[in-house]
Amino acid sequence: MTAHETHATSPRSRQAGDTRATLIRAAEQLFAAKGIDGASLNEIKRAAGQRNATALQYHFGDRAGLLRAVLDKHLPAVDARREVLLQQYEDSGDSGDSGDGGAVDLRTLAAALVLPAAAKLAEPDGGREFLQIVAELLNRPEPLVEVVVTEGSSIYPWRRLVEPLLAPESVAVFHTRFTVMRFCHAELAARAAGRPRRDDRLFTSRLVDLVTALLATPVSAQTARLLEDRNRKGRSERKAATR
Image (spheres, rainbow, N blue to C red):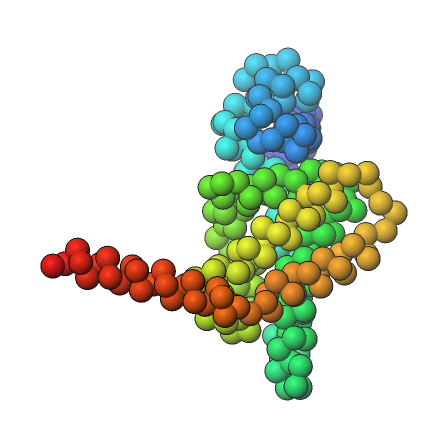
């Protein structure tokens, strides 16, 4: 055993790891119950049974660092599951081969968005709290997308694969993929906030149905007219400003 390994398994190191994990668990519970900004750091320290006033700052620095640690506890597993589903989709090589290929592809990609996150409903170590925290971040008036979708996130290949199946306006104007993400996580958070169910499969399958429908929803004639009216007004205003 090397000196490094001896240090890594020393009682002090194990205690530091336990303290960090306990603080993260307390943060999960209070962020989910009171909101990310509603739970004070002192409350989190008390819930973690920490009398050391600097323990939280030592391990995480500040609230943002603690939130990052909570997300980093869960996101790798979600990304790993989604990457497997996306790879299976790409390897299948039969997208669009049948008459309803687009619909089949959309449901497969909707499932790749929903299922990896929905698996957290059955995870006892903070999975349900994680879903509520992510939903808050994505559904704020000013969403903190960059906190959830970081470099290397599986959301990037998901976005790339689903884009060819959507109408151009759905991507460039109406940001349908983000709308779907917000809806998906809001529904998962509502489920997570309730009592644990014996089986979430029916709920999850129906959520995949709804996400598929949102992705597939065409731009109506009325919406297209309103968009054109807005664009025409914008062109007129820009033209007048250059005179």
